[in-house]
Length: 174
Image (tube, rainbow, N blue to C red; front, side):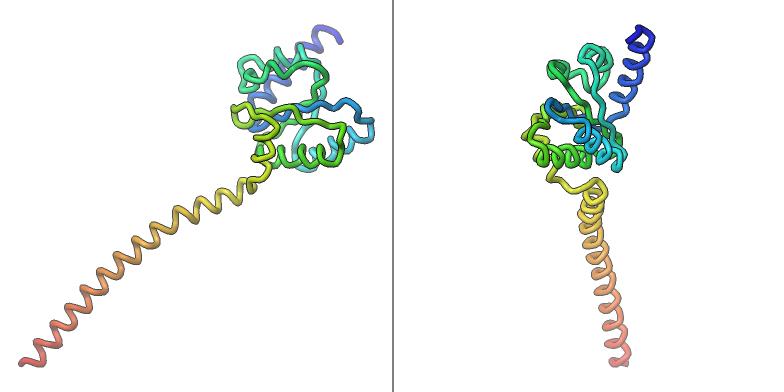
């Protein structure tokens, strides 16, 4: 590879590392071309990327990004899966592929700036998708507000009933 190509590749990777919400590092040794294409296609369907990069170029691209904490992982053949939207989807897709292929190994990941071990990635993969989490949060936030509104309404209703009872009492006394 020529120097200009390497510089361009490092800049491109650096940009991807900066934008990524989730990155998973894998060992792809033993996979044949058909299996690699299957992995790439399954990730592409979910708007994710998979790339095999030289370790020295990946180290340079990681400088100044959230991936810098994972520099020690760049040894041996490394494949990098990158997700820009929902890191849970990325982790689920990669782990699903690793379950199907014994030769494919997940080494680690960087999820929203935190270095994760394969065990932590398995835990992350069990989370519901982002949209479901947001719906759960909105529901949890709505519940106390609804109760407050009901309590305020009940107080006002009681006051109105008390006034009505007082009016009737005075009318009956006259």
